[in-house]
Image (tube, rainbow, N blue to C red; front, side, top):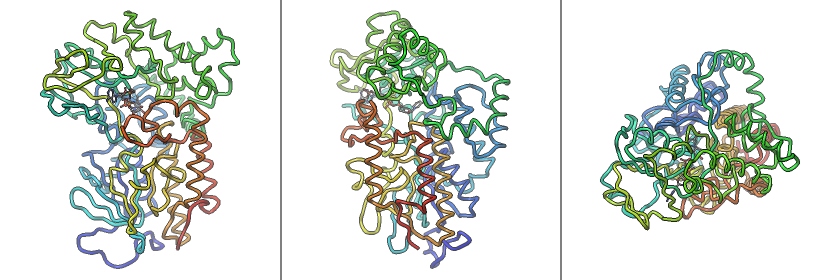
Length: 546
Ligand code: N01
């Protein structure tokens, strides 16, 4: 870059467009990155596979889709006018409201003019001599820029398990993460849902209300708490907004990036059973993913974890009328919180309906999808619609879906074959000038994603400003620093119960994926300080070249 932020050098070949930065993805990460880069005077091209902005909230339009972070916190903090003027309707915003918000942000900050929609990035190649990235898209664009920023999202590559006969199904086959924009009418239909993660737990009650009959194919029973969603009342919103600056500051330094979920200080095991029960009962009534942060040892000590898990198991038994169904719905093979805890609206109650049948496919495995429906080892199910709520190739899937390489022949796919390796989750050694927003090795999915996105985008924007001021053309993670960071991420994870669960956090849901705990468990507050220190020490752990 030159001093005014524009690219120096030879004129472009006819069919290559030059920019100062390329951003991949127009979800919450890409939108804010574009806004910040533009305010630095940079020329930016954003590519987005969808026809509109919103990322995960653009694709996941299934009925019941709703955020599990409170709307007043799951929103940008970078603009005081925006946060004061935008009116959230519900405590936990529904997908259509979040998508409206993303569109409002795009319009308010005039972002669309730099975004190419319906365009998927196929490859990104770094020229080691010229220090620039060349990006190719599925529409034939070729663009070039010194910096490339991946804002592709952590849960954006849907996973369709490779069931035998999957493509033979004559009915309607849907995935929650690729939901048709026009909606789906389930009235009177025989519907199957495979999967009881966050998406399944949200969509199941909605489908049950409409369907003729709903069969839920469950492999792993899951912990879920009632969300206690409600319309927001004006007094509460007024008080919240008056305190916004302090609340946002607390969120930035909280472990989960949520002011309403502070760092716990008490140990579950140090309290009398009756006291603990009262704390859990209050947590159950409150309806928040903060349930597993009610005590400091819930995610580190099996015995402490059991006290919380037993509380939820007893609740399931008290809600579900048929004892055999209640038993099948009771999670016993993982510690509570080590797979993402769910928030629901009437999930367990749904199994008291006459038109809902739970099929435990751990006992009776799915053998095939058939033209007429689905076959387990012991039974055939005739279905009109089959919904796969089977999750995502998380955290690395969308990144590795792009052919990322350098002119010297290194590929990201080869480098990450045994699991992702990054320094701070921001960059990966050997791939200069390539930043990742909420990449593996950063707190990302264990936090309020918008808090984490803002922290990464602000750090990257400051970094690019500093590089420009110092005349630096190339920044790269130092390999030894990366090794130490990866070791640290693993050490912190190994002090907890998280790695013991077969979750998407460790890639266990994708056959053949290396088992590595991918997000950073050190907490957003600590992580933020670390990133700031690294920058203050002249980008310690990065190699800079003028
Ligand atoms: O995906 P998941 P998700 N045969 O991977 C089952 C975020 N999110 O889309 O546990 C049979 O959690 C699988 O079974 P098992 C949130 O971070 C947030 O629900 O592997 N079953 C599991 O039950 C969340 O964690 C919100 O044994 C199969 C399910 O499918 C993340 O997205 C809402 C199977 C997949 O669950 C992903 O959630 C929605 C097979 N072959 C999502 N393969 C909110 O903010 C998979 N399964 C509230």
